Image (cartoon, rainbow, N blue to C red; front, side, top):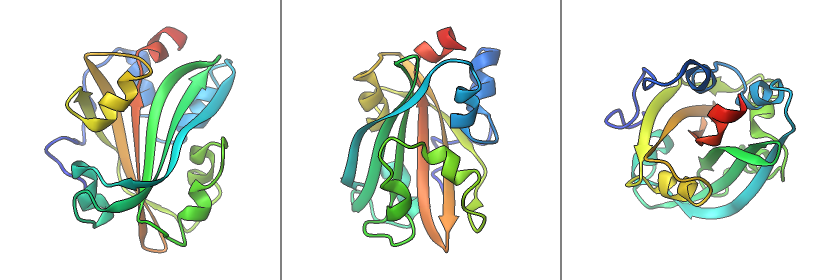
Length: 174
């Protein structure tokens, strides 16, 4: 299961609008689309990557082992509001076709197109600059820390780990 030293069952203390997005039980993409602003997905990187230390348990993988990852920005009115990493085992026949989707939202598929999908509970964290994903998000918008959520999905027993970091601009656009 997911490393509990960083990821917890309760969200961090945040302003109401940010906490509501962070704890959204359904598709974050649908929630952002309903904001009335122009929603888009910008793919930053996709392909072979290495697992991060705090991803290994959820993926049943060794630290820094090969994986397949998709890094995207979710934007509202062309402003990045969420940095996300989806990671699965390399060459996974169940997840690769799902992840190879260009700029289409992964959330829409995870919350409606895969009835056989199983979802673990959301986990929350506040990631500072020492976390590799916070360092990646800082290339878009800098912050002392990033509210984040993480969830593991299982499709035919194969895990996918989705981590979303909420960027400072989201608060201004909600």
